[in-house]
Image 1 (cartoon, rainbow, N blue to C red):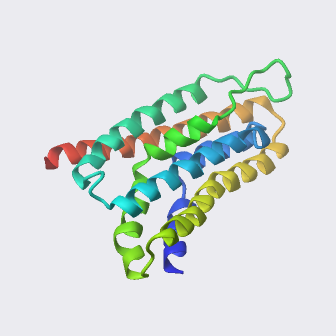
Image 2 (cartoon, rainbow, N blue to C red; image 1 turned 135 degrees about the horizontal axis):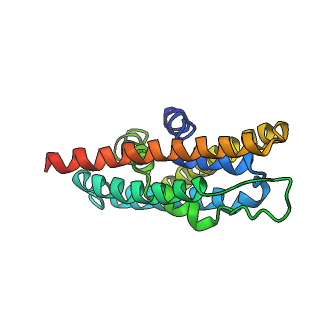
Length: 200
């Protein structure tokens, strides 16, 4: 039970994946973003399989900062895409970029927060709870479904809020705010990279 409480509390806290889900909902992309959520869940499941069966030796602790650097770069790229967008959801000619499966997969795979959730679960909590063999897959699958549900819930909240906002100016301000939050998340990832470099 503590495994699920721990993972859900971390995965449902604000972060780059959830900010992107929220922004998708705000821009009316909730239903079109289902593959993004699936990408997030698949990334988590694959990471859980790798760490659950092979252990933490696959990615040594001192290599996490390089993943943080890649995650920061990808997060900055996505934030830039959001910043340059001019959104008017009442204008059918406005092209809003829909988040894809691969957007979800890569942002979750390169998110150090996701790996830091997985490491204590697979190296400490699984063995303590005597979770082995097929149980690793089943428990990891449930947690990964919860991981996909986090940005989905944020996106739904954004969709509810988005319906109440009709003014294009406010829509673009919210979009820029979400982009700035992504940039802040990227800065934290970049900080993790720089901190890891100084420890080498």
